[in-house]
Length: 275
Length: 265
Image (cartoon, rainbow over all chains, first blue to last red; front, side, top):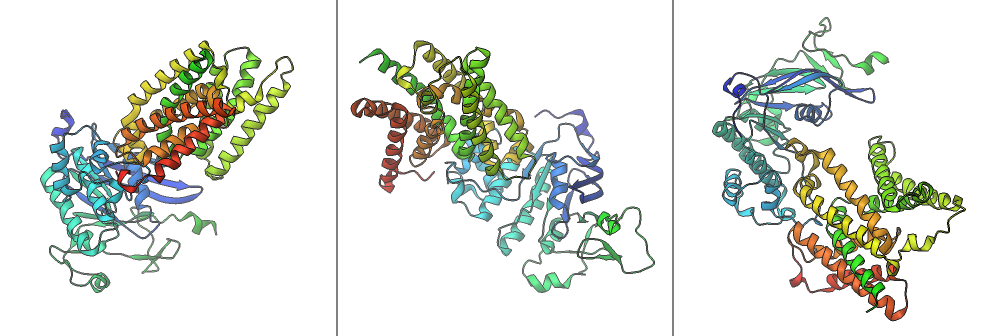
């Protein structure tokens, strides 16, 4: 693909969301979310279930139209997308080779190179239904890489991968960023590992709770307790100042009762107001 | 061999050759009941053809396509499950067709021929329609093969990768409508989907790639047509249902084959 003039400006964001809100049937899923991602960035979306992480990803990918707000992409932006779960019905006879070929026309050498990069070159001629969940994640990563993406979008890349494999997946993603210089946007639940690979973390709970860089100081000993000293190479734990916690319905409860929401962190919970 | 038999065989083979590959997609996309619903609406198309005094083939295509679009629109409502919607539309469409035809006092309509096919009455003109339609469908299917396969495997991934999902899906529905229009004469409205699904399902056990499955489905369909016609002559049974019975027997035969013959692919 020929490079466009716009590509010569490395500082221009690859993709930008501006004041994006989304509601389904009166229920607000996302409230005034801003996000900007540049080449070489790794941004990870974290947050509880129902926080709108996948919805935000879908809006950025153009799969979902936001209720309000806008998304700007750099012209000619090529996205490599790795969806959360791909289950292919056994009634469709499909090898990994053919699966990879669905994304474009590639030679055998290219296919093998992409599978080698994601660590599963031996799967090339296997039926796609016979590969395990963890292997499938790597096959999906290979399909995304074949597109030579400017932006890699990963929805829970370590899902279905065992705990040791998860560390590997995140290291692989960081390596790919270094090698290809692409931007990476991902959703993950594996907080303890996310921190090792991400440059920037965006904590979402319908609104943007906070964004920040992972730091070396552990403020979440429960993750270490849960997962032990397992993969601590390059591990950093994200710390940020939270001035509030959340009620079960997602509305904000401030630690300091006198404090009101700041502009960047608006907790406009409509259901709360309706009561 | 008599002329009418040759015409029946020629028409049936053409229909089987298209129904196989298209039916493979119907099976892969789990659209069996969807196809059935569209086929059921074909009778409304026939009635409309009588009303307007134009070719049934055209009106059947138009009605099937309109119903397909209606279904896609209704599915977006998310109030009623898809199978409920299909159940409502399939039977309403068939009943509406039957009622509409009952209102046509001037014409005598051989309902059984429309419902179960009348392959032995295939005329030279029918053959032109069947072959024209079959060639069109196969050519367009070849054109949209890769994007359609990509959508079938994962629609959102295909969309992100730049596949025009809506356009390709619409073209696919148009192809199903076309096949229903041309296959109606051979196996009838009630049995059309069987000619798409049974050969494709049988082919699955022998195929290692999507293309092999599509081609084998076409071949198995042809054998079913020939076998069904032969059986129909031999035992004086209705031709359309005999073809479906032959397809079913082939399906059973394939699944009775030893495991070593089957492909895992």
